[in-house]
Image (cartoon, rainbow, N blue to C red):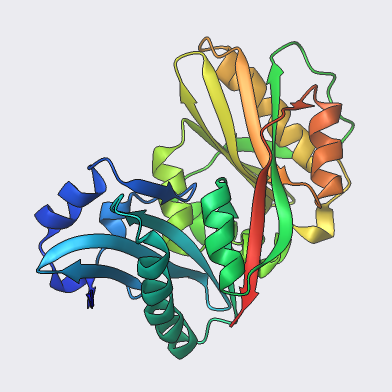
Length: 280
């Protein structure tokens, strides 16, 4: 039976939210923004049949070059592959028009991997999770002039510049995502040397657990203990308010990052998530 593809921005936010909360087949990216906050963005579409929502898909850019699959929800009627193909085709056209060159997705489910492979996606990397219980960390030797202080909103331009220079396009956060991270984090700090911000971290917490959500150091100052010092400060600060368990995610290919976390007592968990990508 044919179905219609509509932009989510043209539909009732109530109907969209109700569908998201139903018992559907669903994938949600590890995203700072909720699906509801994506409805009015380009690349967010719904499949409808007889005026009823059958599936939703959001695929939006994070930086000019790279887009991510934000979510896909489909009714459990056995037609999810058809819905995905039609919605993805529509979103891909929008992304190409916006100038995106690559499309990425986390792949935590076998059924999603099958959908993506059918569209030409290939494995690209793996997201790994590392965990530690806090114990006193040996302090890294860094420039004695290095200062760690709480981040303020006024630092955001410098933070964005560091993020862009420290990460490849696929792993960069845009200004909106960085601001969202800032507002949701429990402790955010910057590293300053000779009056210049050269690194930052942002971490969230819930009860006695915390997650190092973002850590970046200006490439000119990497491998000099700056990242180590930022994480040390985060561990000291959050342990003082009762946090005892910490987690962090990074790419399996980011050996420098994994080495840093191992040096701080983090150990890799058995919770890897496949990353797949497609050239647009």
